[in-house]
Length: 239
Image (cartoon, rainbow, N blue to C red; front, side, top):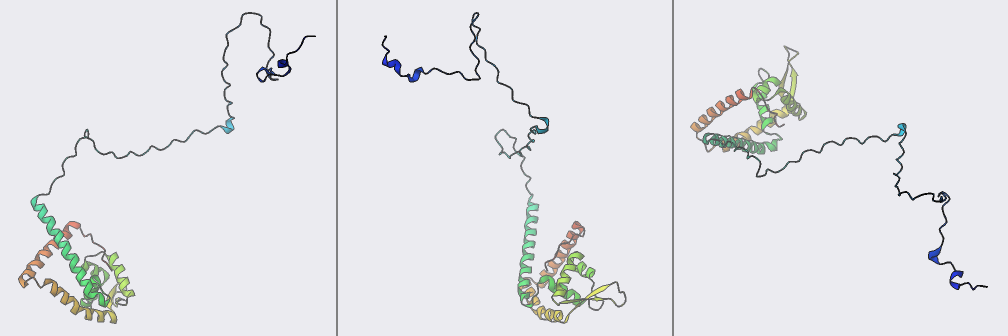
């Protein structure tokens, strides 16, 4: 009896025979020369059903153009026009007028604060008091203050709430209403007159009587000029 090698009594790990898969085709005997190997294309993806078609991606909005700093290749901007010496002088003058107006209003408001008044409320009380004989309507008040009637209406309503004004119906024309001072309004106005006058004197004390006359004339001319250019446009006063 031939002796069997002990090496063959155990299966070598690298000599394990491959068992063909059940899906693999059985090898066919060769009947001719071997054909070159070919590679089959991968199967095409299944086309989804029409009812479940994948929607086309929505178009994204174009990104806004970003500002880029000018480079040496860009055309330089034309130089900005420079004001003339006369324009520079006019700009400085208007700037000083605005500053004087702001500081004057601040000084008056500071003096009138103890009476629970400010510059615009004091002016309203003064105008209504002066027009007491013929009556002062809201349209007349707006004209004297050079303000819109809507803004004056708001101011009058607030002063009525504060107990400074009455709004009475005319005895001769029931469609018209006139403003009059309440008892509290008359008392506050009488008490504030002295403070207001002293403040104005302190501001204008540096000007002589002749200077004040010239200044008043020049300011009136400027006011008429501005009103002609703005074509009646007005500003809302502070209540």
